[in-house]
Length: 62
Image (tube, rainbow, N blue to C red; front, side):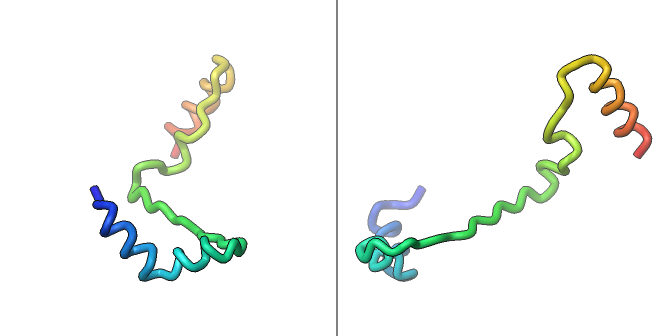
């Protein structure tokens, strides 16, 4: 874990402290790379029997 001092110096290094103080509309894009942790095929699994059967058949065909 980061200590408070390390976190504060990181915020100051990137100029975020000034952006927060000015009240500007600061935006950030955060990208999380899962490296195979979620391939998109298992994100939304159907809950009813007919939908799950079609889903399982499609996964086995690939």
